[in-house]
Length: 156
Image (tube, rainbow, N blue to C red; front, side):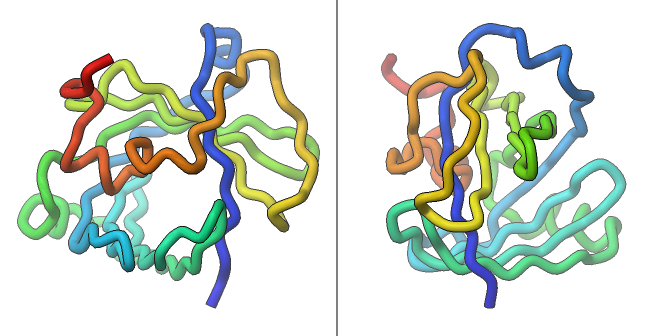
């Protein structure tokens, strides 16, 4: 079993856009219960199946497996909850860590979130100028919740 320790933030401005090329991600949930999520995803030309446990603070168990792209594509089309999560992901190195910026498309267009995976919950990390408010503990920003409550339907 592996653990995912992830902090999530909103993004301010556009300065980050010059730092990386984006890759198209499509993902859907075969199970989006908060106790366990089962996600299928395509990232560029690769497919993945991921199982995650309940989030405890910023930590949760995670199991991820590469699967054939065609299998992932079929699961997204026929089995996944709708709407699918579509986004462009930009990976920006920050020392030994990597910021992943997700610019959401479709039903979640307008939402831009930066995530960083940490080796432990108290690990220090660089906070770039474009980093906004932390939303790690706000369940509205969990991808599995964006399926049921897309950003386009939020009351701002």
